[in-house]
Image (cartoon, rainbow, N blue to C red):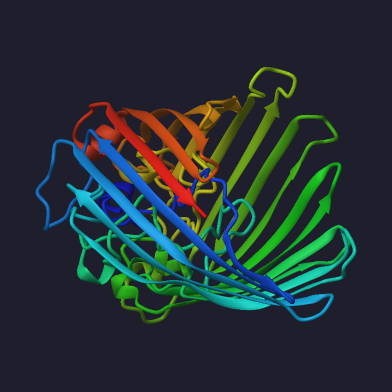
Length: 472
């Protein structure tokens, strides 16, 4: 059906699956306690973020911005609000969170032109509440139920890690949320109902309903559940089912695989294990997506039956006795692409995936955010090294120096070569003054023939960025 070249022109240059880095490595500091008496706790919370970015190629196609040779921009946001906890008895408590967000972008707009450089705005961010029950015994059963506007991450974020991206008006006013594409401050789902249960045994489970209000995601909704078995010595195994309930506004969908969510059945098995070996971890996941064809529809890809998959496997080893305790990891991730010679749609829908750290499910900085391939129609090999210097600087600590190399190729390349290229990145992390997270990063993409076929050049692409996030 679709080949990558058309998908790249629509999706890579549209609001691609990138943003949502959120507070990628920032450690949440304690909230400011305003009141704590007789079982009532009232706190003020704040998260203020700034990002400075420069990319040596413009991947955007927007009628509102002329093509640029390179792109420089800055993003900023502030999320502030209140948390309330009310103890009901020895086992039960009620809680609620209400925050607001303001965000904006300045400069030339981002390198994918989802924003053109002068957007800004604000809205209610978190607005949720719920009940929590604990048995009162360590390791005993507990339950938490919540609903409303909130971000939620399931597991490692492979399928659900908040709503993204926070785009500007580069692709139309219906997508405008004030810019801040990379930092993605508007990361909450518009409606949620989430149940988390710890049974006090090795089994635990979640059930959830999630709805997006973002136009570029088609304002789609899903419901699902997962069950996990956790062994403290050997690791965890889990199973998951998700049902795609609706795509409320399919005509506003920018990403070509998003409409597949409507009527989709997703099955997944995932887990990690050490095999009882100290410092070793093997993790992996397999996802299968299917749906029936739609008799009548307004978006062509919605008419096709979905038959897609994704999987990854990743061994890692931590040298715990070595200086800076380095962790070395390898990961192979594969995401199916649509075969143009079949009536079915094999293009993998990555749902609400996101970053839970650098190079997680936005795989690479340039590739995952700007050039593609994204987490569909791609094979990605990753080799990474993470270290923890933990060096006292007087004003805080140097907490990380890490890097990775990713190689990207297409599964369905159409008339194009399938080799997209290799990206190398190195970044540092600092925790300063207890509340300030600071992270400079440099990455470079070395194009392959497939990249040249799609983009028309083979120039190396350089990316420079600095993130600063203050939390209370």
